[in-house]
Image (tube, rainbow, N blue to C red):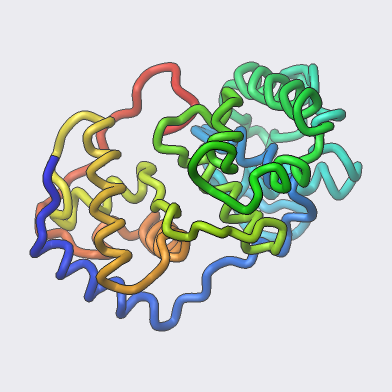
Amino acid sequence: MTVDADAVKRVSARVEELAKDFEPPTFEHVPHPDAALFLSAIDHQTGYSEPHMVDGEGPYEGSDLLWALGLRAERRAPGALTARSLMGVPAEAIAAVFRAGQDNLHDPLRRAKLWDDLSKGMLKNYSGQAEQLIEASGGKLAGPGGALVRLSEFDAFADPLRKKAFLVCKIWERRGWLEVSDPESWEVSADNVLMRLALRSGLVAEGDVDGVRESTRNAFRQVSEQAKISPPVLDDLLWQKGREDPDLIGNEAGDLSEPPRREGVVFY
């Protein structure tokens, strides 16, 4: 699918305006690299139906609620979000930790399998420590031995467009745990929020989910270059401001929505 050059120019100008008062998240609430790794691994299709307060803060919904509940469990039992704690974790335990009132996390069994696979691989290859994976990457995101490739060996991070892998690397970098030596390898994630923005603004044309995801990523790469905003910061800006405003960067293409996700996948 091609990207509309005029739309790129128009959206880039809009993004520059939006970025003037935008502060990207620092992720200071994430206590250690393993917490970022294991929560990113199950950050998909939460299934929560409404917002909830967590320990007097919020309200949180969707992905934010999942993270708030997971980090609460880590605060209550330090080390809970590590490979040694999560290998073989039962689905019932995940369901209990991530329940909010009467609202339940979608498919805890699948998430238990993802955590078990990730835990076993981390223990086998990195002594169960995310710091060792980061060190083994040598600061590289892409290429042989880079963090993205190493993460892709686990089922939770097998998405060919690496949405979750980019998420965890972004958190690691913001927290100072990963010093990226190839920043040109950053990509904007192409999740449901960004695909909807890209479609409605006319950046990309309608199609199946794989085609729209690829086009969305390519379009926002061009926007990133024209607006001179790094892909991870652009990703944060569009997701935070655009999840409640589908017309954030324009609605020239009309009332379009993202294509349905493929059945059985753990990424969009």
